[in-house]
Length: 61
Image 1: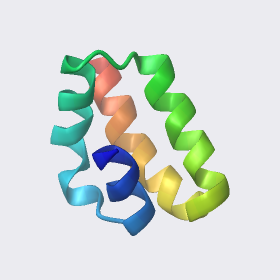
Image 2 (image 1 turned 90 degrees about the horizontal axis):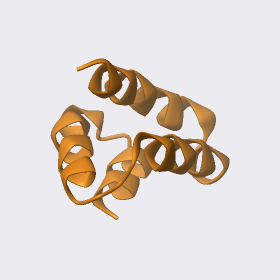
Image 3 (image 1 turned 30 degrees about the horizontal axis):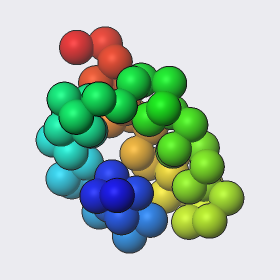
């Protein structure tokens, strides 16, 4: 819920830490990717794709 709210409002500065918390709470990388793409249709592609680099960095860490 928090990740979705941060993405849709364009508040990506806090997104990295909340993506980590989402993973700690059981979300998989695939589920996070699906959520970001799904939100793109509602919040707009620019906001969703702004979240993508944080998600990709999180996958590589």
